Length: 475
Image 1 (tube, rainbow, N blue to C red):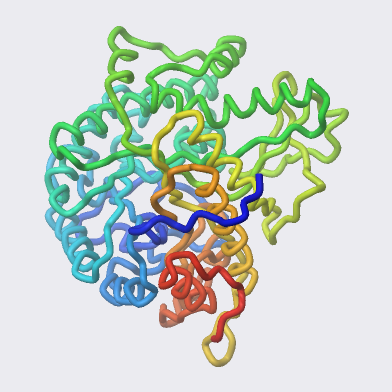
Image 2 (tube, helix red, strand yellow):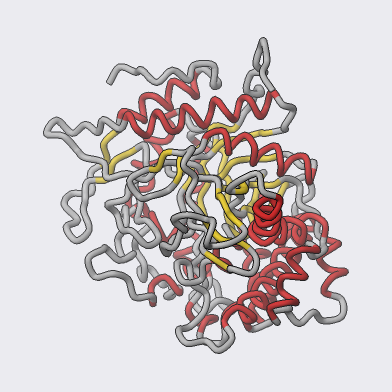
């Protein structure tokens, strides 16, 4: 559909940017913080760990001043569960409480609306040792953590997010893992964990509405439209299968309190059905999100069989489809370009994804991740000419405006990431930020902050409320 005149971005649109606690804060075991699963995970020794990252913990005032200069209307961050509760539950860590109080105050004093994610991959290690998300007691611990956050910080927040990319934790446990190595029957365990996470999310949403009337809360999965590899009915069916398993399983549960039919039959056929206790489904139905946040980087393409799929997507990566030869086979899409990390670049898929989510659930949407990772280079005069990032974001925002013109209700856009941070499994070298952090994998250097060319570009986008998406910018 084409329009003679596009709808503008809404007034009061929340132009923002995102980070997560473990990827940006550093201070991984400082001031009473307990270890999380991230701190205990083994990573490629060629890459940095998460001990210092961008050192936001010590430099947040400098960073927030830069966010304000950028013009951010909102900043999406996460609260480290083990910084508040070193043992996952029990006694609060006063230093952790104070840090987030100071950070939130700094944001609001600069006119930036905080958008807080409760859980972004970093389960406290003390809970993991007891079984993590496989243990139903973690549901209680999460509700306790969420209620503490609402009580401590609820007076200064309008929006909360529950769990970041829950679907990726289940589908790509080898990348963003919640299971110990050599777990028997891992898939069945993962889908049981998914059920527990959904119950934990439901309790958090109910608690938020009880404790903070008027405050809004929603889930934050990674959602991508799925294309069939061809017009063959079998390929179209495979795409439908994967869409249900990748996307709708999580949002149908989160928004409607019911399991998606195709995904349920998939788990049943595989022998992976979760144990559902009396009262579980009633609890899920009680929880009502106020909006849906979603992360989008690229679309997916699948075929019905490996023989006809061409070069399959076999790499271990959260954006790679993978293969379940009885259900779907990830395949390449020759119509799309790829970035340096072999991820597809598909702005039109962004519009399609927004339309699909909104048509299905009729809830307002906010984008909480969308961005381009690249090997940025700092020049001798401390510049980063990231025109490739500007092109990516400009093209995606143009499609987002088309989605708004289609009638999709979108109230914010928070690309990944506000500032350079440590990628989940590809180190600091894979950079996403508008602000360059001067360090490499093992040399912290001076951790100085430098504005990239994309900083100037996004600053102009925000100042024009999205009216100026042109890619040329003085720098």
